[in-house]
Image (tube, rainbow, N blue to C red):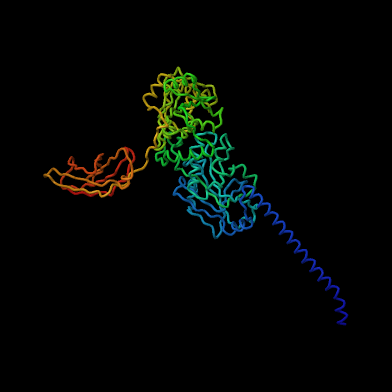
Length: 582
């Protein structure tokens, strides 16, 4: 009976085995399909990642690194206004328009500011300091959340992520974008010619996008373009933010516009940048006759007697005069002309930033419409006056109301005032000087700056004669910007002459670097302060020793500081303070 029972179960056993084998084969097939699908997806994502760059990327390795190590951030700078951060695997969600920091046990976040990161931001995305439209921050998620998110597309290039401030205005392009980008890239060795620029402000390309292309061999990416590559973008290595060391002007968001209080750039660095651009633009300066360039505007802020002005300049300086126009010529051809000019004459406007391409010894002449005070609007005067730019500067202002044409009926952003109350219109029309104001929509400023002007030739030429030496770029020499070192071996000696009379003698040796320099003028500054007092007596001296008797009291302790000065304005550091007792 048992044998019969075994025979009866054998088909069931074989059937069970067959089902198990088939199930195993089906399971392996499904796993194979899933694996193949995953490989195809990763291959597609790899292709998408490599659409950015020729750099090959191991997609699976990059994804594993993001999942296991998360995002890593290390920043320089103490405040959001001077901070630049380097990230590994910083991600950007194109749907939410938010950057994402993925946390894992291996993540790094330095500085770890906690809630202070939102007071007001981690950093400024542009070089314009502390502007609330330029703040950068990120959202935080655990790396485990990646399982529930769209598969990331990796950007394999080293990237610099920033905001352009106003890519439709040439002054802003150079001052706020190009110069800061160039010198930020100089700070970090991996931000080289192969780095990728990513612009997150949301603007279109703008009229001068080709200038941004000169900074890297890779095509810059706009915020809108990121959406076409995927829902989650991850930058394998990126720098976020811009150096502000190269900017020299503030636009009046908090206080009326003017030069920055602490300018950190000189003309030497600006000229190096200008040389870099001219090289990238294949521009070479051609030697030839001296000539004067007059910038021509074609839509507003016109010079109404331009032919007369050109003739007067030619006769006064015995030079050829030429005009250039941003509306009618390529930027390259304009820079080619300006880079060999002896003088640049222009109405106030963004086109004057091209004065950075003038040769040393050239002159910049800025024209201002009626009721506009040149002392209140000085970005180009400040540029020309930077040590190492070696440019002359003069500003002419129209003081004759009959020589101006106003346009009160234009739109407000082109100087129109008809939208204002009648009383305010009458006040603006009667005003002879635009008062200092904040940026950016002051109607009186806009009304006056968009006037057309007939230049009074007599007062214009008088100004040039009074303020300019004859421009001669061919003979111009590079002005030294080398500062003296500390004076060496400072000493003091004292003597008491009587109960109310004493002498204090101070001597020192020249700075060590002076013996290697040719300096026109060397002087020494000495400060003497009675101990316990808040004021000091300053002296400028031509020699290395001096005896003071005036205001020196017997039986008194004096603190003495000494430093060297080259050519009136190049100051050295003070030597260690001397403590001198009479």
